[in-house]
Image 1 (tube, rainbow, N blue to C red):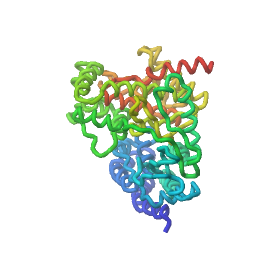
Image 2: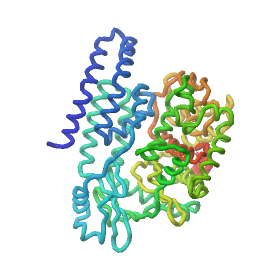
Image 3: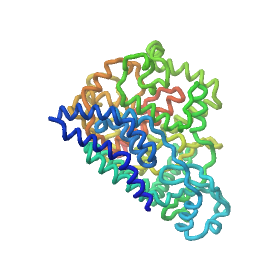
Image 4: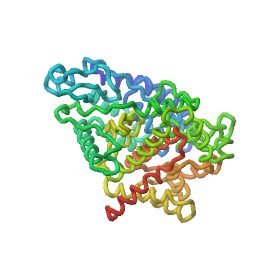
Length: 494
């Protein structure tokens, strides 16, 4: 039996009873208000079960659930809270199917094409994995898509689309955005083109050509479900950051540092701030203060607090100055990509950044790229400019208008809400965010339209700010990117 069909059957076995219960309560409801009350009860009942379903099925379901966890405009809070607990854990595929794809798409046996190949992958993801090879005397890497990746993916999306039509049509727009992005990831021809474009852009950029390395594309090893590229040597930034967290007494467990950072940032941006009660006597949602006491931040301020913890961590970490320099370079790299590269890579995961022996940073994996239009770049550039300005009624009005011009819409158009949210997304952390007043502002409105290019810019900012927090640097992504935004606006004449 086809594996995608079996997977679909299992999906409906697990979710069918939940859907039936929601349908029953919708039929019983006397009016919309009564339906909302009934649904609220079901949200509390089934949210954890939904997470368990995702954890069993894994693959694309994990990715979609993680996206939904930061989309309050369409997903109930109970489900968002559960989905934030999810981790990426993609086990590698067996070697035989990978070899079959290589031989099919490269048109020769593995032994004929390569002098050597490592059967153990360098890394594995939900739709493919990468192997180190020796080709014509040089080290290289081949990225290979799993043979059933496409069929499984489309089967999963068909299941999710039908599920949302039954229980939450508002989330269909988000699902279509995610589906569009995943279709890009499946298209290895496009990814190979993106790699070539980014490689060429960094080779000629005077600010980066001696500081940043991108794998050189190898057209002879690129065909169908295979992408060939040069091998970049060096440990992943993930390794250094994990050691840094351990120096602070934090254990991220089996999950990757990137997933841990993303979870902390998702909690910080989407949960209510300043909840009462002893269990929350930390900075908001645990993410903003990296587990540090709320009282200390209020006493010292974020910057002084991070300065003290940075000194402590630096004394326990290997090569701290190199880490700080690499991080500042990574911030610049993504500001440059956003405005000056043909495509923008929205996945600055620490597992995709290498600390090379010659002092350069290496950038790998370009499956999450998007080509931004002139209008999209202009909207983001003006939003970043506005966010960097000191708080005032005039500045808040400018931030809210710039946010709306990116295509973001809220249900009530509340200007205070629309001025606050971009600051939470792109500016440095503020001690005032620990106050209960911010919770009231966030309750005044809700986002109903969140364009995918803004989501991707926010996701990148969220991950980069998380990297900064691991090094105890309270960084404004808006301030880091605004010089690139202003330079682009001047050159583009918009």
